[in-house]
Length: 120
Image 1 (cartoon, rainbow, N blue to C red):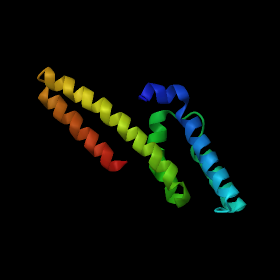
Image 2: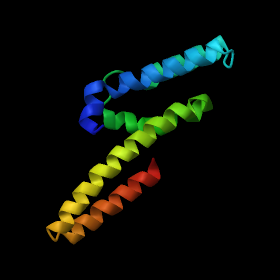
Image 3: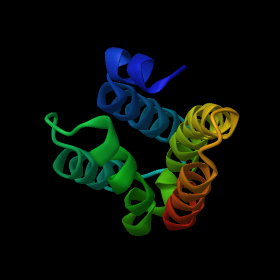
Image 4: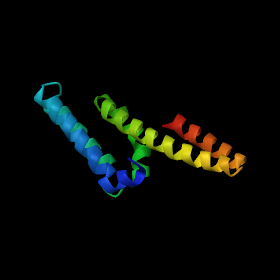
């Protein structure tokens, strides 16, 4: 799945759906109180307004489990998915730059990728 596919399927919709499924599952198995589930749902809705771009969501995503550690699994799933997609795209760009002898640009792009990866 590439970034265009993520956009077409609505990353924010998928994320909210997965959080809702997570909350329902936890509630059904009595692993989470109704009050805590309500707080998490309100938190997600307030931090992920519908007009966010996928890139903005990716920037916000690592902070979602700072307030509610229960969200760590969902957050990790999306960060891993994004990193996998982004790694493939960057690899293709770097490969193309090297084929065309644009070594400085390839090096810069690789450095940017690793710096960004460290911040996620």
